[in-house]
Image (cartoon, rainbow, N blue to C red; front, side, top):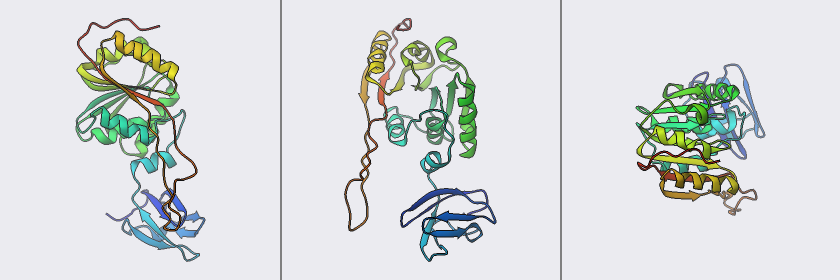
Length: 263
């Protein structure tokens, strides 16, 4: 499919890596020179375009993570792809899954969930902040993923989840231990509960709440990604390391009576 006006493209090559939305009559400035967007329209993804300084840059189809990290708006800290990937895999989320998320924040995890539960699944995104819901909606519309998401302005601790028999519930909030009773109500009998928190202090409270509510097969980990330089004459780890961002706790619900929130 040829590139058309309004599409996002990933420009890559010789120190350049940037996501751009193609607009007819505009110019893309890079450290290796300028590209006219009219030279991109109607070309195929993978095409090499020469800048005015003579450098060849590749025009690629951006991945969802490229667009999220470079073009999406943010109102909160986000779940990065390294953590989102582990959540998706370890929670068994895939096409047809029904998943609730509280809170959605800027919608990064929401978008990745929507991408993977298509075409027959659904993501139910909850947040008590109106600006978060608005930003998440804008980002999902940009990625054309809103059809698979229902966004709700609601405090799940006090008002709970509207859904039942969900495959998974993801809690990314300041006091997730207080939302575990409501998440338990919403999950199917052996559903997956995922909690994402940045500190050990929070982890301890989450583990206690999981135990109180009969969760089993509890696992906890954090994810570090160390990228390497890929220049043929300089293959070594990058100086900057994307280390700790948060702890991921994953567990399975059992049919134990639902307890009260842990204080």
